[in-house]
Image (cartoon, rainbow, N blue to C red):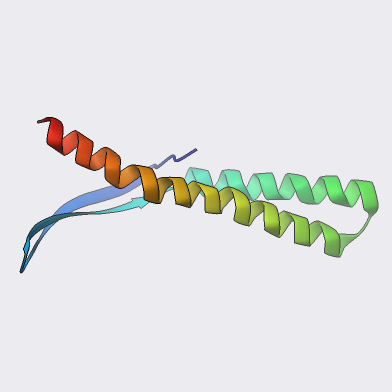
Length: 88
């Protein structure tokens, strides 16, 4: 699900050499996770009429979806950038 819709790359000159830095943003992924959490909230509310349970499950759902997205990003993006740079 790692989808980025905005970001930038730059080279930072440090004491130990140059480093490629990046800042990527994923508004579409964030909105998708909010929508998924909202869906679970509505499902729980329709099934049990318990608002506090719906909020707990929606919060867990959002944290799970967005957390897994960020974990995949932290693992995959640096490796993909290194592979793209090393191919040239």
